[in-house]
Image 1: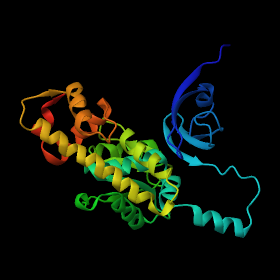
Image 2 (image 1 turned 45 degrees about the vertical axis):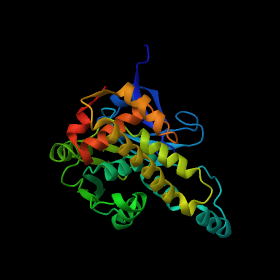
Image 3 (image 1 turned 180 degrees about the horizontal axis):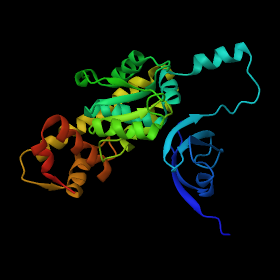
Image 4 (image 1 turned 90 degrees about the vertical axis):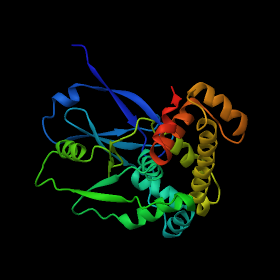
Length: 283
């Protein structure tokens, strides 16, 4: 009998690399209840990381978990040295997942409601998370939008995906994620590329204590381009995305202006400045 395969879109929770992998459909037919746990080896999705993906019995992703590659336990001295070398941003990404953190920054910047789904016994410092998100925002664009929690009690609703469906129906305009580094709902269409680039660039900086400030700096440069776009678009009737890219390239010489980048600018103008101005930008 020929083996049938199921295509699964995976995202590394540590670096954000994405790839579609194939898994046997028999894996789902053999399990009727609970969840399925698959360890993704190094090289399957990204070159550097091993992680675990959790699926429900219908093949829907319900979460991720990172895996420590170290076989032997480090000494206390080594552990303390590594702890000192790990920055706030690195810990943030490791605890919540690369793509999830990108989504949180997007929700904060673009003013979307955001909720973290937790269990009743979850040990999560939501105040600290909101403090970190605030630090990524330039001073003039700090806002009152905060990450809130929604508690999932499996004793009341045993199936997580059913609970997620209920929450999505109630919070249709909200960004939803869980503690297993999985995004439950994204209320925008532009994706995560903008914030993923910010995070990747900040993580590449040697001074780990300054990484959050670099994200704030990158956001400031993006907002400068938003203002330049507003100046271009406001006095005219309409402009195509292609023509706007050309005009921005002439004046935003420090930015890499692409059609995708312009889509983020358009979304920001629509949500934070003027829907009427945003409508003038045509795809």
